[in-house]
Each structure stands twice: as C-alpha cells, then as structure tokens.
Length: 226
Length: 260
Image (cartoon, rainbow over all chains, first blue to last red; front, side, top):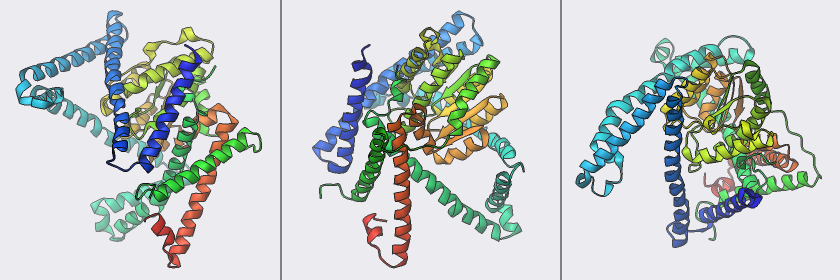
C-alpha cells in the first residue's frame, strides 16, 4: 500500500476532524444546526464500532475454532467459549423473534428481550460480581507487599495506611476520636495535593500529545516508520 | 461573544499551553535548543523485559487497558499503541513471542497494523502472526480474567500494561506478580496509578505515558514538545501562586476569570 494511503490520508483526516471538534466546542453554539452537524460526524464512530464488533466476533471464533481443530493447548476451554458465544446469540435471536410485538421500537435490541435479560441477570451478573469481589483479596496481598518495612518510603506508606485504616474503620473512632480527623486530613490535604499535581501533568501531557498527533509529528500509532 | 459562554478561560489556557508546546517544538526542531529529557525507567525496562522473555523462551503479554477510539480516554490508548509498536519491534528483533489482548474491537485493526509494521521494520515480517492478537470480549472483568488466564496458561515472562485501566489494574498486576513475570505498567487514570506502583516492577505515572511516544522516537521535535509541557506546568503553578496571593489580598479578578 502506498505511503499516501497508509500515512498521509489518515493524518489529513485526523487533522481536519481534530480542528472541527475544537471549533465546535469553543465557537459553535450548543443546539445550533452547525453544532448538530458536528455531532452527526461523531456518530460515524458508531458505524466503525458496529463493524469492529463483527470483526471481533469473527477473530474470537476463528482463534478458538483453530485451537479446537488442532487440538491445541487447552482446547477444551476454547470449546466452552464457542458454546457460550453461540448459545447467547441463539438466546438473543430467539428473544427478538418471540417478543417482536412486545419489544416495539426496541426490537433491534437483543438485550431488551426477556430470555437475554434472564441469562444476563441470573448468570452473567453473578459471575461478574464474583470476579469483582476477588479484588478485595488482591488488595490485601498487594498491601502486604507494599507495607513491608524495607525503606523510608515504605515505612511512611505503612504509617499512613495504618492511620487511614484506623480513621475509616469504626473501631478507630472508638479507640480515639482523633483518628477519623487525621484520616480526613490525609485524604483532603496531602492526597488531594498529589492528585492535583498528577492531574495537571496529565491534562497538559494529553493536550500536547493531541497537538503532536494533529500536526502529524507523532505517528507511532500508525506503526513505526521504515 | 465569539467563544461559547463559560469556555473563555478554558480557551485562553488551551492557547497558552499549545503555544508553549509549539514554540518549544520549533526551537528544538530547528536546532536552536537541545532539551534533554530524564530517563523514564519504565520505558528503559521494556528491552530488559523482552530480553528476559527471550532467554526464558516464554511469551510477553501486552494490553492497552479498557480504551477504544470512541471515548475520552482514547489518548491513553493511542499512547499504549505507540509503545506497542516499539515493543513489537524489539520482540521481533529478539525472536520473542508477543501476545496482544485488545479490549475494544475498534483498536484491533490499528494494533494489527502497528505490530505488522513493527515486524517489517525489524526485518522479520514473516515472524508476525495475526493469532497473537487475541480478542477476548469487550466487557471489563471477563476481559481481565481472559488476560489473567492467558498469562497463567502461557506462563508469560513479561507483562506490559499501557493505557486506561480501572478496577482490573490490580487484578492484572497482582496476579501477574504471582506468575513471576517482570511487569511494566502505566496509566493516566490517577485512581489506579497507586495499584500499578505497588504491584508492578516499573510504573509510568500519568504524563509519562503520554510522553512515551516522543521519548521512544528520539525525534528532536517531539522531545521539544515535552520541554514545552514543562513550560506549561511552570505557567500553571505560577497562576496557582498568583491566585493564592490575589485571593488573600481580596482581589477576585483571577477567580472571576476562571469562574471558580
């Protein structure tokens, strides 16, 4: 593919779209026809997303299908994945087909049908919550490693962590009424100051990254250049 | 008013930051200034991580978090793709297997392209395998556990996470620790930075992630814009100090301008 197609056209599209969005945000009055036209432009992303979703499904099925056919590593897990995807698709299509009238204008939304909602609420939501709840154990093990007295920084972290725990847990306030105040001060003063410094750095970094990309100076996301 | 209501201060600040960035960029590009940037340990460690994976004969896992091209976090995803190109090129040079796990399918074609070109640049286009871009689904925890499962099954020697992360950051980095992998992670989601700092071997904090593309390119123009971001930070801090002094003196002009 020529350099024009691979590099210059994407860079030109990036520049034009970026400038249009800046103009729309600062100069076009919200609710005006011109501003509405720019929101239609951002709506084109939905077309990309819909197409990419199908590509994602094909890649997923292909990867696991090839693994099963070659009896590759953990091919049995691949079978479960494919069964899950296909079953959910069938349930969705069945829901739309049987509830066409009830769904009304939302008939194109598989998620609005009862069978899909049942699978989602009774199976998926619980599995999702189970995975999320594991985070508590990961936090405990990470905290154990971080709070070991190895250096001055780790010692300060341990002290602050202990004060935060005592300040936030009900028992801390019972032991000494000053613990909740210390925890609140730690959160609102040193923690807020650190967070704001990081946020300012991120905001400036993001603006200048966007400038480099709009000007075509930074093109790494188009792949390293030959 | 030409500028929309309530956005005047924002526009003025945007112009100031962009102007500072551009002036520094052009000074550096034309050779009138030679800014030096400090070493970013997390980026320097990528080569070490890939070397380790090559020696151990085990793969490298790479993720760009929960970002796509349709949300306000896209800039982090793009920064992650910049680093992916660099990582893929090194992996190709060292003959190491790199597996990338996209979260959002919109990123997949871009990532495939970035990796393909990286292998081409390394002179090993035949070594690129599209199956090493593994889509696991676009939902937070199923995706995270898909990556986690792959890290355990493949016994990855290095895990690199660069992009926007939320609650899955600790799940990935803490479980990666137990596989014995060297871990490099970076995000600009400040509520997750602490988790990466604690659980990963090297962490890129906030703006370091956005600076990665410029840092790795060694291009004077891009490095110049990083110098410009330092000017912008000095301006911001000066404005903060001025605001504190003026407010203490009872002058509210600056507060009114920023509508605080």
